[in-house]
Picture 1 (cartoon, rainbow, N blue to C red):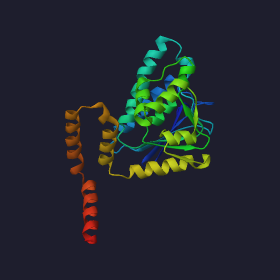
Picture 2: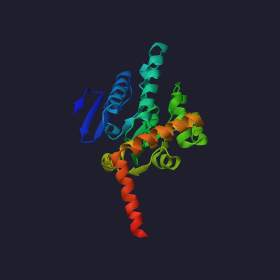
Picture 3: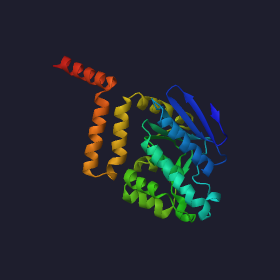
Picture 4: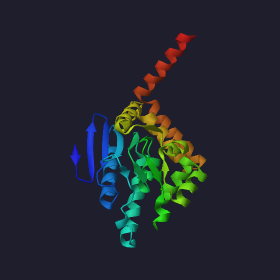
Length: 255
């Protein structure tokens, strides 16, 4: 386990748990953004990138979002937003599964983390939203675009224009989270999901994730190039070949 106060890093075989640790609300400051970015970037370069479970310390806050004390002036806000944008890009591009384990509030920039994750497990007390408009702040453009893509334009407008928080059931209905469980089971379930996704053929998972996340930003010619590149990568993998052989064998027995 690594602990630099703001971020606790724990590894168990193929799963790394990243715990935001800034009580009382796990507000995301510049140091935490840098630490998350550098950690996820380093994990992505490993030969076999682990699955990531992102959570917050305690049961009341996954995270209250950006530390408002650090976003008051341009000198701090401008570089901060650039690094935060880079963090969201890194989460989106990460080749392995990223699962968020949410207990309590996940608002503002923290909701953007959820929208860039592959799966979100939350407790019944979870509340999400974009309150920035009521606090004189602006969400990241990338996060707003992701809200439209994941939630749909009308739901994104409702969250962003009104700045009100919604409960776990509403978050589930609009697609901001994937499932609801008890507070005691959130972490265990998130790790279980992450292990399941991590058990998929790695290059296939990475190719599917990349297509899902990036195809809306690419033209047809670029999509064709990406498809061929991914095809070349996973067709040469022994694990992919084994999976196809098992499928063909199973079907032949049914005939």
